[in-house]
Amino acid sequence: MNLLFVTGTSTEVGKTVTTAALAAVARAAGLEVAVCKPAQTGVGPAEPGDLAVVSALAGVTRTAEPARYPEPLAPDTAARRCGAPLLTLAETTAAIADLRSADLVLVEGAGGLLVRLGEFTLLDLARELSAPVLVVAAPGLGTLNHSELTTWALRQAGVECAGLVIGSWPAQPDLAMRTNRSDLPRVTGAPLVGSVPAGAGAWNPRRFRAAAPAWFDRQWAHHRLGSTGTGPEIHPPAGVFAP
Image (cartoon, rainbow, N blue to C red; front, side, top):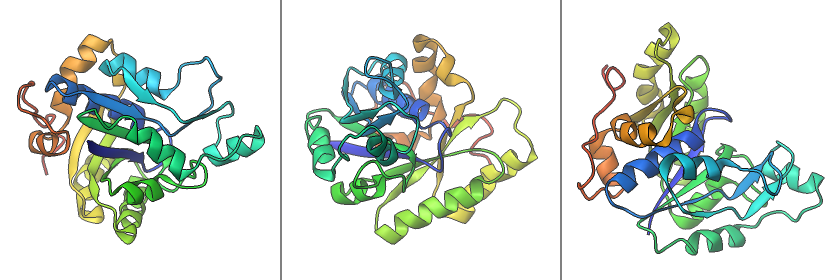
C-alpha cells in the first residue's frame, strides 16, 4: 500500500479537488486508488461530503469516512457539540488498513495540519503510519507564512513533506501570487510540485480527468503516485514551475 496524506495550510485552499486530481492521475496510470477522509463535518447523514466530490471527479469507488458530524466546525469540537465520542487514532488507522489492497491510498485531512480530527491531528496520524504529507497552499497573500509554518511543523515531527501544491491557481494571477509561486519553495524548503486551476472542481468529470495529469510535475507524480507509465504523460502546467 502506497500512502499519501493531503493537508492544507488552512481550510478552503483546495484539498478535496487536489485529492481528486491526484486520484485521477493515478487511475489514468491504471492503478487502483482508495481515499480516506477521517472526519467529515458540516454535512448531514445522507448528504454528500468531500468523498462524494472525489468519487464524482476522479471515479474512485473505494472510500472510508470513519466519522461525520453535522456542524461545520473542527471535528473534535463538532463531535463534542453533538455528543459523539471523539474519533481515535486506532479507529482511523484501522479504516486505512481496510483499504490496504489498493495500489494508492490517499488520506485527506480537515482544515490544516494541526486541526484535531478527534483525539489526534493529521500530523499524529501521518507520524503513526510513517506517511508523507502533501501540503496544499493558497496562492495569495499570507500563504508564505502559512506554508512555512506547516512545513516547519512536519519537520519538527520528523514527517516527510511530499511537496507543495497550489490548490486554486487563477487564470490571471496578481503580483503577490506570481511572486509567491517562486518564493514558496525558497521559504519552505519543499518543492512546488503542482497547481490546480481555480474552478476545476466544477468541471465535468471527463474534462477533469483528462486535464489532471498536466497539473503535476511528471517525475514527482511517477515517484509519489506509483505511476506505471501507462497513463498519459504528466507535464508541468505552463508558467507554474518556471522561476
